[in-house]
Image (cartoon, rainbow, N blue to C red; front, side, top):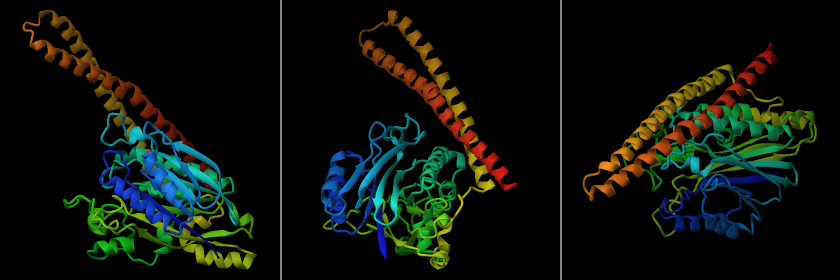
Length: 437
């Protein structure tokens, strides 16, 4: 029986920022070179030399590779595969935070969904997606605080759904920055029709009933971030109820689905998940640091070749826990889900309007202050005041320029992107309502 082994890891490869980057990337490359994965998806591998190091060491096993380029600093996404790549594409997300959020950096890297289409000897065309969604927003605050990530989720779900409608099998992996029960992941699973490999292989695990150990959090609940087992976790106690309950968060996923309308071809092979586990939980050899600030996740998918209706029926029994991956018709979002998504985006639109008004007010005041400084420069009394006067003028000019860009250019950009998604969702909701009548 044919197997497809997939691994996904956020490498935390920020140049000059990420701790122990050279040692960790070398260890990651060495580990993958000794593994038996058929597909590897990496996130946050922003330094091309790091990508080249991994590529060179895994080339004997995974000779076909793609590094995706997006934004000012690159998307940080790479895919390595055993099978020939026949097409590639990248879809930068329309919203990735604010340009003024320099410390977050999402806007500068241009987060995206990268994909390669491979030619599998049994399945034929398989489209493999790798993504990293917008980071800020957490899980406990109102949904509108995650509006950019929600837009990412909708755009990702659309492109995955389109791939399946083209008759391709789909495998998706990455750092989704969202816990399994979040609205973000519900949108991705329902609209894209994707099944979660971890959930499919751990459906027997009950919800936690008491205090978990960090090892239980990883082994039973798939924790990949904020685990006490990770050397880069903040030493201070977490304020997140999710982290306290599960000893971390599950933010990294391997997802999969069959082509749309697969029942039209009873003899078509099926994908199902055999097992999934968290990887890179140990320290790198000869060191005390972890491989990354995230753990990785792997999944083993098996290809079942159906030969007739009896095989289809038996496979359906095996796959019943994989949900929409078996569906003959497109999976759809529930009315409650659409209402929550529309409400969050509409609230975010109003917040964006208010923020732009404040920023443009600061811009107008800065211009008035600059005019006052120009006029007042005639009466500067002492020579030693001149350098301070010049520096203050430069600062006010910078502030005015930044507020103009933020309030007018980015503000309109953000609202138009939100408006596009809201209009798409309203049309989708209307068409879905008609189909149910």
